Image 1 (cartoon, helix red, strand yellow):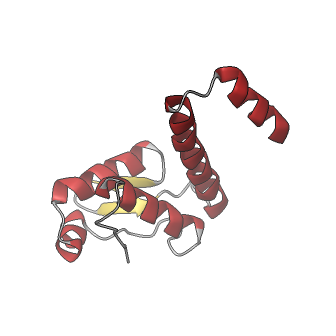
Image 2 (cartoon, rainbow, N blue to C red):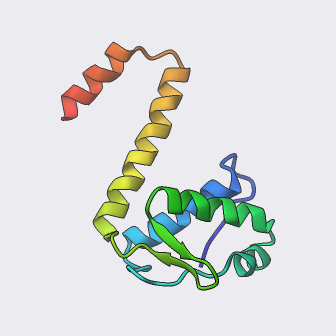
Length: 118
């Protein structure tokens, strides 16, 4: 269900996060669908359960999933594939924005680009 690139510089928890968001935006995971348990994913991917748990916590904080103690984690009933795709795009935009700022881009340069598209 999930794929990881161990050679990537992207942390595993972020890769898991992105996998879930992409599956939601593609309509593979739908509102109310139950996600696999943390331990199952950790065993399947040979990663630490804390890593999977961290991804699930971020997904919950961002509104993609909701968790019920003793029942598991589920795709949020309030989330549509379009909202998931939009949020993923915004997350990717923010990551690229951080890279641009780290590379020395100024606020004015960034705003000129944004104004061109909005």
